[in-house]
Image (cartoon, rainbow, N blue to C red; front, side, top):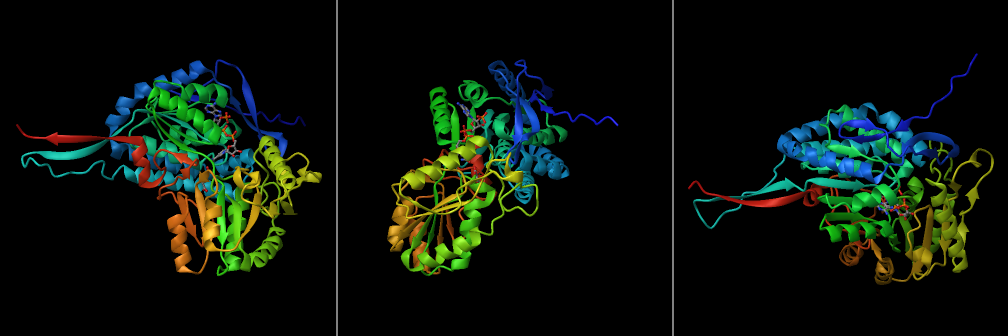
Length: 490
Ligand SMILES: NC(=O)C1=CN([C@@H]2O[C@H](COP(=O)(O)OP(=O)(O)OC[C@H]3O[C@@H](n4cnc5c(N)ncnc54)[C@H](OP(=O)(O)O)[C@@H]3O)[C@@H](O)[C@H]2O)C=CC1
Ligand SMILES: O=C(O)CCC(=O)C(=O)O
């Protein structure tokens, strides 16, 4: 019997309502980080001209989309949510295969995408302005939110369903049209998300999707003078390029970049709850979240207990292919990311930190073709070390011993980042001091650092974020501008 040859699907650009081949003729393989020999799909390396086509399509679509009205735009998002729900299993499996996070995490992320779509669909029925009393009693004065126009969206590979959706859904419901460039690393998953918008019947040109290198397609998008807004999540380095280009062109921008998120554990904390929160915050998604725990700052009276409990529990973590339901932690998302993690483990050792658990690449048997690393724990870390200052974006934590709550907060704030921070304590005064003094956009007490609720504002302080917050009602501030209207009858 002749065996069927398995063909690899090429995921095209979606421009002006059509799936299009790129004129470049060049494609990139998207591979499975659990097995680099498995090609999950192929995406195109598009050209600058095609970025212009996508922007042109979004520009032509913007008036009709705005005039469709917020209610009707919201109704369309309900349909997109239903399409995503129909395709949940396929999209979650693709996510696991393409990016490496475990299947339960991928299912959770896709379900979150559905919930975000429904949240912004409901925005379609909420107010788009306020009535404000005028000093003129014959006048009616009110504000009316109006879209920016065409918004560019650039996303990273670590949440290829949730992050695009938490940017695209509010952009659309508030009346903008979109040009979306996903991270190449997880562009197949992103293409499948875009298919749900197409299947829901979105008018042509409203959402355009273009794949290709950040240095070509991303660069052309951020330097376009025809955009009205740009929103970006990714590295600090690229974020600065976006800010520079957007400022030069007078384009409104929003950036969400890295984190170096601390968890503080005080003497009066519940040790089990703290260790559960540290393990989940640090090692879920293989530490590849901007909200991941990377510094564990422990008061001296509880230090040994926390360290011993951490060592006991981390030893139970099963590392492997995330499609297998027995696995707790998947591989790093790419060879690059794996090498970054291994490099930081070396740097930590060279700096004099003590590696007390893990940190080795796993290559035997079924691990041979994947980008696997053991979860790593360092102790004797000081705040000035690079592993306590730079974002590693992998399963590595640094234990830092402190004597008081004040010292703990000072160490926690001693970084350029300020995304998320947690405190474990049973003392309300310590909790209140932390809430007041910590420099972070997400402040969590007796809860892990990585936990984002779609209905609440999301974003950080210092180098972590620039511009208005994402998600929840806060998203409206970025995706709209306000008209103040005064009307009299003669
Ligand atoms: N805040 C967060 O959630 C994230 C933080 N990071 C941090 O960044 C580090 C590096 O990850 P990496 O994927 O390289 O991050 P990048 O910032 O390079 O990538 C993020 C997005 O920007 C695009 N991009 C890259 N270069 C440009 C450019 N010159 N102009 C416009 N767009 C561009 C990328 O495209 P392409 O994929 O085609 O290169 C991708 O879509 C990680 O180790 C981690 O520390 C990474 C991901 C998410
Ligand atoms: O913790 C989360 O769920 C979101 C994290 C995030 O936004 C990111 O890593 O980019």
